[in-house]
Length: 151
Image (cartoon, rainbow, N blue to C red; front, top):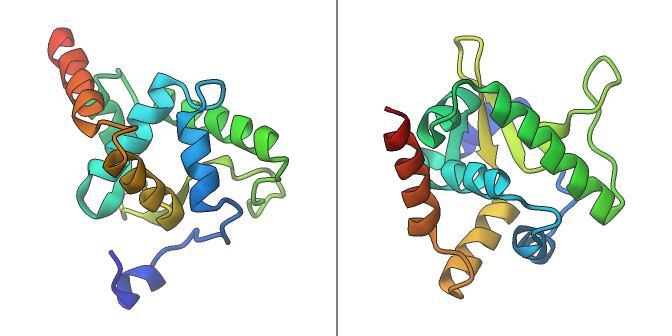
């Protein structure tokens, strides 16, 4: 994903407003980051090239459709913006593009879009895992258990 060619193909790559340290604090703050938010972000982190569609995330997490992921991401981004007192990027119609707070975006080519983990967020997750403050196995394991129990 770090190749220059792939980075140039990212359509939504708004300038970051959040540092790695801020991301670490956000991820550990349960008033901002709920269980679904954390599972969603860690699912993208654990996906090839740190990118995944809302549909893929929903499937992995055992959700019925992608809407819970999309609306959850909007709520998560709103809490982040309120906490940091920042404004989200605007879309071409003047509305807020909430999903680009934690992610960059790229068309998959079939009408779906990849959520691509922002580099600062990826580094924050890596550090929290290294520090023992996040356990990817627990999150991914609980997502698999949820999915298996729904089969």
